[in-house]
Every structure is written in C-alpha cells, then in structure tokens.
Image 1 (cartoon, rainbow, N blue to C red):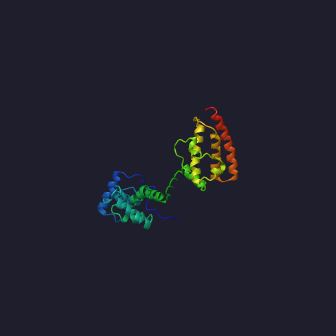
Image 2 (cartoon, rainbow, N blue to C red; image 1 turned 90 degrees about the vertical axis):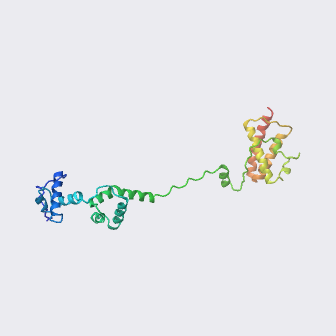
Image 3 (spheres, rainbow, N blue to C red; image 1 turned 60 degrees about the vertical axis):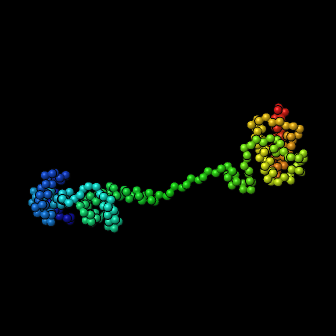
Length: 253
C-alpha cells in the first residue's frame, strides 16, 4: 500500500502557473499566513492545484524576501563550504542564506559551482610539462661518445703546405714520432684545412718532394694520436689514396 495522495490528481491542474493563480495564492497567504494546512488551502483559496504545488510555488517564487539575482562571491563560498560539510542537503544550505531557496541553490551548484570546482581540480592534478632538452652541439656529442679523444677546435684560417710541414729538413717517421701531443693536434688542424682545400678544388702548388712529405707527416701524426695498429693500417690505406690524388692534381697545376 502506498501513501495516500493529498488531493485527487484527476481534478487538479498541472503545468505552469498563470498570473491570476499567483495573485490568488499571494492574496490568501497575506490574509491567513503560511503556517496553516497546505492540503486544505487550495480549496479555500479557490485554486485547482495540489497543496504541495501551492507550498512550493510560495516558497520558491512568491515569497517577498526571495532574491532571484546572481550569486555573489561570498554566497558561492558559503555554498561550497556547507556542501563539503552537509552534502546535497539543499534545504539546510538554503536556510543559512538569506533570501535564497533550496531550488535556486541546487540549480546554481549544478550549473556553475560544480563545473568550476571540477575544472580547478583537473588543472591542479595535471603534471607540469617536462622542460625541452637543450640541443647538443657536435663537439659536446663527440666528447660524450669518445671521452678519450679530445678534438680541438678548428680555426677559420687558411693553411698552406708550409704550415704543417716540419720546420727542419728531416721528415722521416723517426724524427716526427717525437712530436708532442699538442704539436700533433696543431698539425692535424692544418692538415684538415689543407685537405679541405683539395676537396674544394683550390689550386695548390707542390715543389720537390712536398707531396711525399705531406703523406709522411699525416701518417706519423695520426698514428701518434690514435695509437692503434688497426687504425694505423687504416690510415696507411687512406693516405696512399690521398697521396695518389694529390700527385695527380699537382700535375695539372
């Protein structure tokens, strides 16, 4: 068995309230007050409405102290604080706010405050973006891959054959193997610039056995820096090809 209805649903009117019905309800409450029996009130006021509908219409729309405007920041703070303590008990929350109904508070929470809190929670829980790694230069990358091989910075200067040949007349491997590491690196810089000129097609002039001396100095210097038998054979093969190309190019100068 269900609950006994407060009125005959077949005989009551439903839907939006008309201005005439609002005026009849307002006039009756002003004369008799709102503390009476709402079940018998519609018949006394001449309304074909349910007693519950009359009570909600008065409490949510027709009361003179109701404020239907926008909520202030202070009211938003009160709603969020009470919601955290009481939950969705809108009647209790509205009772702590002057001129606000439980229906207005509930609608304001569902349409604005709830979305605002969800957006703030999502923004605070998102991880910060990772900083972009700094690009590595070619010198830094090479130093990290080959820490034992210190590559000097190549100067932007023009070098000739005399820049990297030994200052003395002796160009034998026995004489050049006594070169210091710093001297070898400095000569490698000159050799690299010299070969770059050859690749670009810059005219070069050779006198006497300069091309042979170039190959001897290149081989001795690179072997002294690298210090590996396998690399020594590799250097010998590459230098033999380079000397052949240099000799062929020198004939056309």
